[in-house]
Figure 1 (cartoon, rainbow, N blue to C red):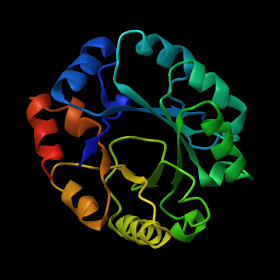
Figure 2 (cartoon, rainbow, N blue to C red):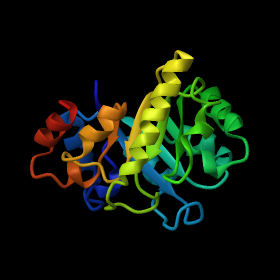
Figure 3 (cartoon, one colour):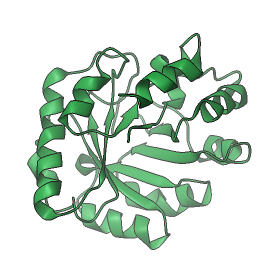
Figure 4 (cartoon, one colour):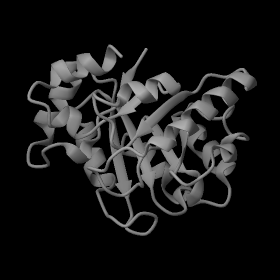
Length: 215
């Protein structure tokens, strides 16, 4: 079953409540919240006050993607403001296992991500310890980029490794995902799609969501 997690970065920030309600009513499974610190990635987005405020007006699963250095410092804070899933980057810390354990200690789901240039093999020790793996299909930090086709080979490798280990974490892809190319990721083994403008920029969000979830 395909799950859809539209990226809040593509929503109308002057009317977030309305856009989130539309996504939730259309059947989106999660809301993807990109937190950027201007250091791990060359951009700054939003943080805990925004997430906490949005949690008050929505029941959708908050899929919080931390693109920040040394994420273990802020795990408890993001849990308190409403994160249901916390994704951190393998490249952002010295001890990924410690971050995973910290996230799980608060009873929320843990996910680990890699950038396009990071080999999928680095995730092998963690695949049986996380609830989700996120493959970035563009360089993280900015929306509106085109999908990097070769990143989808990482999806296939992760799916293969998970099968070998006898586990089945969700495999999420994020970056440049559209209705035209999403099937390529699904065919490689992805089951969670992050899409921004393809959802929030659609003339009919419900129809866009239906088409994504029918892949």
